[in-house]
Image (cartoon, rainbow, N blue to C red; front, side, top):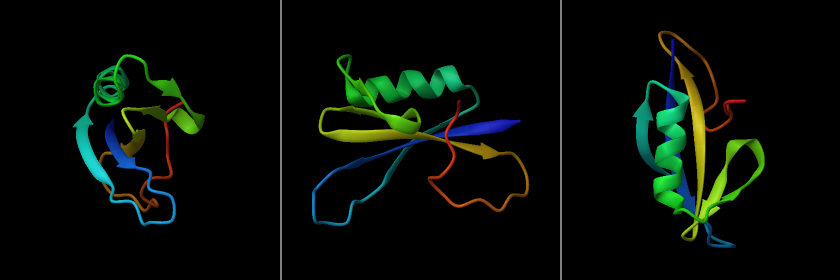
Length: 78
């Protein structure tokens, strides 16, 4: 079983971005729904499962249940 972490940041060029965890879901469809809620209905699809809208970049990270050793913010669902 995997969990889907939705996180976002506001892109300020030249500055470090603060990353916000926006929710953890048990299905990809729930995570995608949350992604659209954050970006708005006119969101733009980006690379690696990201979306852009409302001045934010939103990603979905796949986290396996149990022990793991992954770099945060590197996995995205296909």
